[in-house]
Image (cartoon, rainbow, N blue to C red):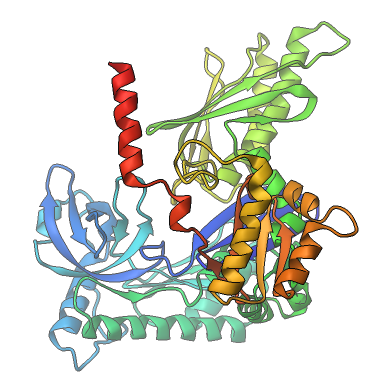
Length: 540
């Protein structure tokens, strides 16, 4: 199986697509310079205690108070609290975790009021980003993650990834880490540490320890609430979690990000540094690799797959519901049971892909086509577990119920990725009607004239729908050629599959988007109010 990673860097967000045999299996979108992301550490202040929930609401600077449960305090909260109090009281001197004596663990069944009080300052880490109407979820058990190791202050344990199978390697790593581990720090050995030399692991241990000391130093100077630690690069942080030695190539369309990724790959896998490529063509990178088309076909309410069968995906506040339909599928044999099994098996593969692709979490209920035979239901259950085995998110799958329903719980860390969202119509700007499509070329001509002669912009690129692009460039003396001669070749027109039929966008030479919306494009508020009044009168 050939795995490729395609990175599309835009001014406001970065999209990372994972392809397996040219088929889209995972899509992540990360806003650039996003706040309150998983792993960020804040100096925060306890706002109020909720004894009924055994939790506290904490002010980290977000519009909604963050949630901190008693169990998220960590077993070593007493040692953590003592250290933090000492650090914040004496801002000129940083206490050492290695030199302090760890206090007894807190009671697992204790009360939040016994450990916290309103107004208390805490150093907290985001474990779940804000989702819908909920604020971030926090922990005071700080973890600093590297490629090979995870460093946890105020502990004395060494844990090893279960994916490392050989007893000899586990013993080697445990002895190695125990010899370089600082006192009063717990360490989790990640799967990628397998086979690594002591020098590599020691360098990362020193880096993580320095990161902890720098974070404490920033906390001493900061005023709550404030951010005191974040990943050097959000893109590298995402890559660290999804990088696999099986990747055949990593392609990115931004020179700065290309340098970051190449540097990171050179550190963790020097022999694989040649797999990183810079994409420098003008065609959008997702269009070039046929990702845009796959996104359009995979993120709708209805998703079709082989033989005419399809699934319907519905999202609610409480859970996600998936219905499997055979559609117009037909076989030579009239065996309904066999047909149902085949459709269900293929649907299971597509559903496993959709869960990863959309990052759906929480409760997922799947209504498969009914099957009478118990062995078929068991076969489907085993197959679903098999196709979900490669999913990095924690999940639990239950066998089919008497009603033919399968229930899945999947770890939810980020909001589900929903590409189909309600936006203002780019063609009519919310008016509900568009100009005649025949006159669209006149609009484009006006916008180019406005950009060249009014805004004095040169070397810009105008992206349009591929059909419009084909029309503009039709014939020997095309409209595009005539416009280039008229305006002095200061622009280019290129196709973009992500755009609607009468939609366009303009990027300058630095790939920053130019807003060309003019007052005449937008209906006045007076006219809008007049139309609303007319509609109300009609209803009355």
